[in-house]
View 1 (tube, helix red, strand yellow):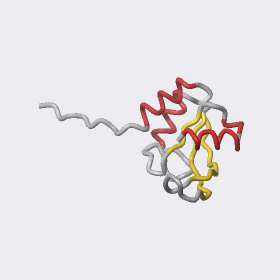
View 2 (cartoon, rainbow, N blue to C red):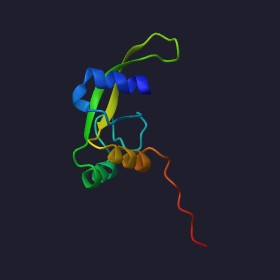
View 3 (spheres, rainbow, N blue to C red):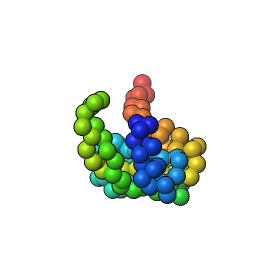
View 4 (spheres, rainbow, N blue to C red):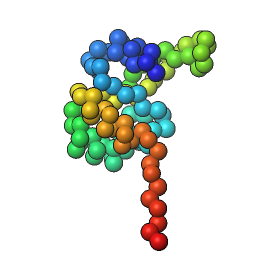
Length: 101
């Protein structure tokens, strides 16, 4: 993952240094180019200057494999605390609430 981040930062310096690559199956994504309404509301409330973008990187399917171009979804933050809070809220599996007995 560090190699992907470095690639992205070199290819597009405007992203800055505080970025997260969202998996295609991220529960924060509604398709590949937009956040779910809930995730967007979280961004609006907690990190309004965050930017979502599609970027191209070279990824190998396995260590030693031949890399090929892939589009990835990147969320860039201006502050590492915002990235950490987003990652905590949106990249972990949601905790199921227990029924009250």
